[in-house]
Image 1: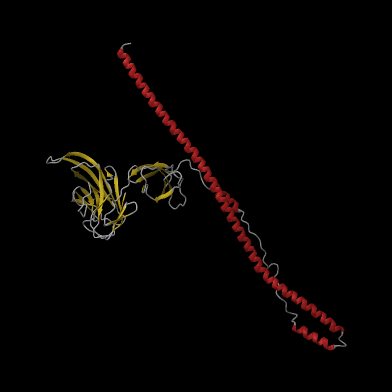
Image 2: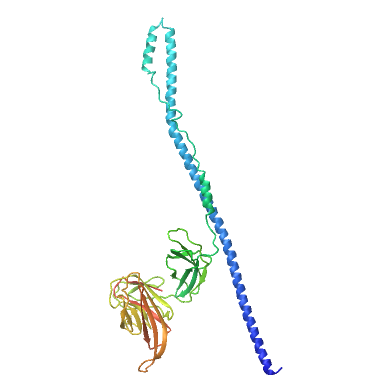
Length: 438
């Protein structure tokens, strides 16, 4: 065999071995996927069995308690009716017994008076007077058996049938949840969770998102509403979090089965305002800035350059104060002292009146004025690198999108220097402004 043929055969053999390795790796990954799917089925089945057993045990205890309470209420009702109707009969009995005793005594006196009528006629006269005062024709009313209450228990035989019908439909087992988490996107100190319906017949009116930091802790609600995405804040970087979501229809109280929980984490450090600025008070996490009544009008900057192209920077205005044309919220290449606003070179910003400024120049297009609850977003990407008209140096063009109150403006921002990350900042002339950044 010639060397060329041998070399070609060697190359073919190496290619076959590489294909075999790739095939083995793919098979191993699929085996791993099968193992995980099997574990999910086994674990979820065991958890479902435990949930059903505990639920029916709780329901059984609650039903027994309700039946006992109802039995005691009915017995109490019987006791009350019995006592209320026996009491007048007992009083009437006493009157009758007293009447019988009086009549017997009167009969005895009459017999004695008659036996000695000849010797003591005055006794017969006394007896007659006494009998007239007793009113022998006055008799108490005694109710007939028809008029007297006759208690009985009215048993509802349909209860068991209705209970059996209700119990037969109580609880269901779902093999697949109608809603699944679609995407987990890392944000600085946060995770954007997006979900979607996978069951077309399920019509969701509300969604419920839960999160937990580790498997040892309990899931807690982080969002309930009609949106299909939510940014979960206060996420520790490089830490795994579990998320799950469910939904419910309009007018219904019960929630759908939970989605398969998904693990997510962020590697991006959270955005923070820089502390030590006299005119602003910060929250404990330094992501909320409140303009105080200090006379200082200095721009408040971020602690570090944590905003990069390709990310979304979001400001949410929690409360507002008096408007001023110098007010601004935006991003810049670097902090610069001595300025009262971001309406300057190497910065883009929006004023509280909705005006947009690029490198200190006001743009023609404007956004709506900022109001309590307004959310302002900044998105940008590097479009191209070039040179300035006078060939003094390179030009870095960024495509910037600013959104506020469901409106957007898009423009190109020219910079003469490379900067992988940017600072953010805000400036407010009057107190009362409160801004959250994430």
